Image (tube, rainbow, N blue to C red; front, side, top):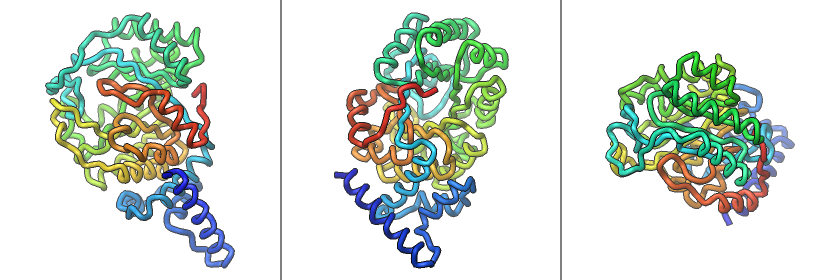
Length: 353
């Protein structure tokens, strides 16, 4: 029903725009004007970004249609699928307030050291069976030891030699030498999220800085890996700070932008932080598409509990999702996601290279 309503509203909006243009007024609806700016490579102003985040819920469908026009220009109706393997769980010395694996968390999670090479390889085979294009090896901690890096390098070399998968690594802060080794092993992409705005960062983490995260993304670029960096929305930030995040990612020129929505985990400092609703999540996704128009926008952690029944609409702005479970929280069953994409008439991009 949601999709039928969306498509019907899209037709009405299209007719409205054509009538205005034909009448010689040259006036486009506001959201379509923003889409035009994005397609011309122009940056939205801060006030325009805030207008998106503050849009009336009655304007949600035309806003999503404008975002879809930009998404379709760059990606058509294709969707990239990603799968995470939690390669090392817990045991982290950092104090990130959202994370169940941090040193300040009291969440009862399973903790284990870096998984053996064979387990990482088996996870890649599972990803291939699920029609995933990008396999994400994620490890907790400030950064990998050289021994841990050896294990990841060996696994990546085998995976790249046997399977048509893109590999994304997320191992924390690296040395220059470690970054080069990952690239040489075959890692295509390196993820290190900004997580929040520079102005809000100290309220979330104190054991490393916002600049540390920016430097790590730039380091991945220098090593020749595609940069992946995104956000976690819903951590008490203001609308202005949400807009700052989008502009910062545009400036950083991240190729892939995972948009996480906080899933408050009992035992973490942000366990009681519940500020999002499904409609606001859609506006955040639309903003990311309009500010970073050509980038892979991925609906990431927390989509099931925050977007709820509006998950399908998110893909009119985003062009990528995670399948299966996240790091320490459960995700939607992969078959359900496949059915959702089929219902939308979208096409799975089998190899996301």
